[in-house]
Image (cartoon, rainbow, N blue to C red; front, side, top):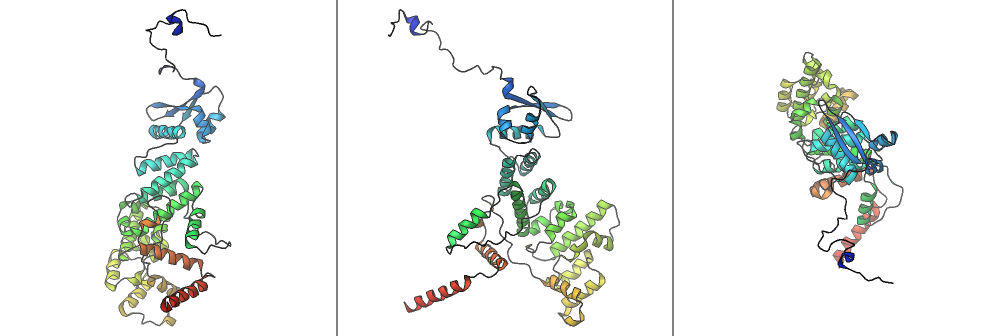
Length: 391
């Protein structure tokens, strides 16, 4: 039964009719529940900072911070964090809460990648890798390259094994299947793919990268992986020779040893044989020798004789080691490097010249070997030609 209102005050719940409405939300300055907040104390050199975070978001992230919280007592809401940048750490915490992050530069992205690796956050690791690949440029490719070695000590991915499954005859279906099955999945695979893309970019812009002072600060393994690249796009092998000369001199200075020709050759080791000497002119070779003697006298004489009068010396007079050396020095570099692994819009195949894509496809076919369907495709092509002629 509905009861009638006796006066207007009952209509407003016992309040005067002109009174302000009661708020339904808690006040902004209301104290938060301590059980829902976790406090991270970031220790600095001169000052300490406190970063507040939602306990549930941190625990749900399943990261190193979640393990830190769950491993402590139930009543402990403050946790100490050392050796981190306060702003980067707070950005990392906000990412765990909102799943959103804004990068300011390649250096900042690398710093966030270091935090993601340290606190075992694979989602942010992959996000950082994609961001680095999207903005990868010759100006900072060495910074990314060195960071990948420093943080992860990884190697480029190996060629995927051949599948025994029967492939579709439709080119579009085969290409779609390749994109869906050959992409990276784990953070380690993303790291390896980004390293491959760094080396691919160095191949394409080798002369610009080799001129940077950062090349002289590379460790020997880092330099070796770059210098031994087959597809380095160089206008002349003298560019590579100049780099080796400058790096060997810088290495002798770092080790505080006399920069003699022998010590510089010893610093480079097998990298002395990386340049394709027999693709140079005699004048280029002699000019390079004035800067640094990477070869011993016998090897220098061999290269000089070939450059002066062709291969007048009979091959039977050369030892097997010398024949292998001549073949290595004479091998030409390809016109185009291979395509990068698609990690972002920058590394999409459509962003590269058609000739480069075609060369990459031919290299892929040569690597996979002849296929059973090649003869069938040749016969079909011949039939289509004759059909057009007699039509």
